[in-house]
Image (tube, rainbow, N blue to C red):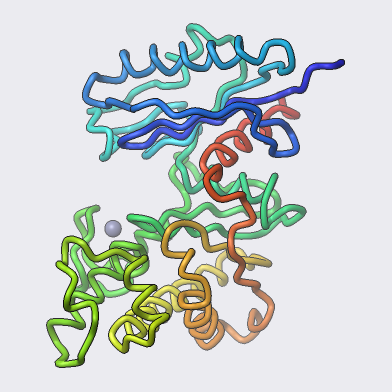
Length: 322
Ligand SMILES: [Zn+2]
């Protein structure tokens, strides 16, 4: 029997690095997770990562043929194959990850940030199959975005394009991790909605079950549960988040005229609680020529494997070109 062609999808996170061998149809043949231990430094980490990929290839050698390696990582630069001062890894300066892995694996290797990988994952395996113009918004700790235009991911002049999360909603607004104020991600993210709830609980005398939760233990999930049970503060927080996000998505539509926007990640799992107000406000704020045309969709990637599928899609997307 012919061997199945697979690529390795690697998602480097602050705590764990997840790996999977994925075929062209998005089937995961083998997956595992290793601790990142970023404090050991990039050299030690890459040696461990390269060894793990080699072991995975060896383990599946009877059935699979490894064709390439795709990597999703914070602050990754597609053009240079580097990660540059990634905040959650604590590595200083520029680390040439692709070159380091290529010392042991002589295969096509590509790297990009996790939101761009998610966008390619949706294009090849998920909700954006067959689309040429769409935007993926990842609503996690921050807000990441991957913009696909005319069938290609937009990398821009320096490889860092697609930072919708750091477009400004209010110049006098919330302090952002990037050093500026009022960025979209300080409002529309899992962290952002927790900040909104904390503010609402300070300002208002409303009864809310969320008052019983310590601010440090508040999560997007507990807010969603409270909203489903009719809690007024929780519902108001979703309405506010949807308004801010919808407004900025309407702006984004004006740049690339996408056929769909896909909401991905932790906060997107709140379902209609976040989709309904976002869609309503997006339509209200949208230039009339775009109204009623842009679909707002949930991710079409299988939960649990999304990061690996995205990273794998990055290199599948390259292979025909090489
Ligand atoms: Zn910012």
